[in-house]
Length: 366
Image 1: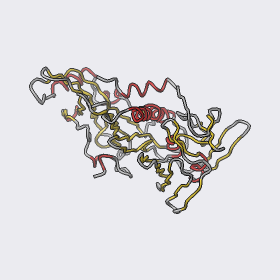
Image 2 (image 1 turned 180 degrees about the vertical axis):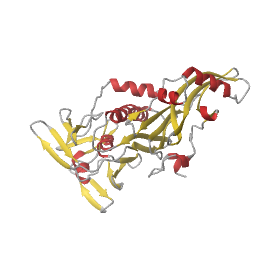
Image 3 (image 1 turned 30 degrees about the vertical axis):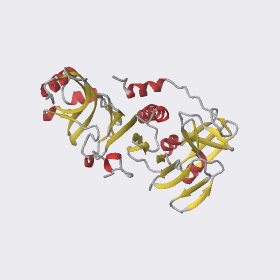
Image 4 (image 1 turned 90 degrees about the vertical axis):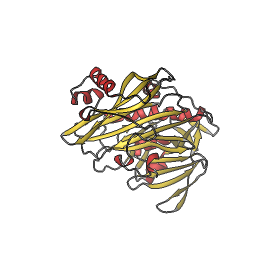
């Protein structure tokens, strides 16, 4: 069975080894510091100077400015949705002409978007100033200072680093949007997703052949006034007996902290061993030769109404089969409902349960 993509992803947080080469006239600018509203912007690829313009990875724009973006691989076209009303910008790789949908103007860039080692770089100043940010260059310290000009605090919400559908591949890679005061816990999770899951997807896309494809699907839940939750699955096809990997992010907006599986177990007055025993009791094999080999608590959701929440645990279960190869399947277990349900990896939950995103997620398109 393959090593978990998420184990690989989070291991990337303790390493940083990036090598860049480009066919364009560019120079690495890793001694340039970018400050956005007083906080340093960290990018997985160092900024580059191209035609005297600072270029940064596209997903860094999403992190810094709460933008969403889509990538059309066949057209080599990037669509950036600018807050607050998601007004799109259309940027084509190596084309200096940019279309701004809100004005239908054609804008000529000094440095057009480029692809360097599989990563899309876009001009930092142009995006920032289009959003109304102030941009200053401090030559003495080699620092780009970007100031949004303030604004009211907003509650954290779920956005997407990448929402891309290229061929059979799906990448719905979430992050947590928030404004103003820095939140170290949210920043840590965003870095994990950015430097982990995002990189894994990019590496897969750059190396996989035509017989393999990947689906990273996200299931956002934020209707509850107290909790911000998102479930993520990653499945590499063909699966050969495994339905991939699963995890959840659960944020208590009132307490301002991330919740762990231990918190969910405590809510149900259970420990891991008791939960596994209950799962085995409820498990119904689809054929007589099946049995449970291993149960892993991969994530959870807090369901119900305020002050009456209950935990729905999300499980990866290795199902042994004396007559065939073992399978790893997704299940959910709700102790208070005494219910164990196998989940469909094509869509874990009812589409209308989740936040309705614009543009829609893969399972919301129909």
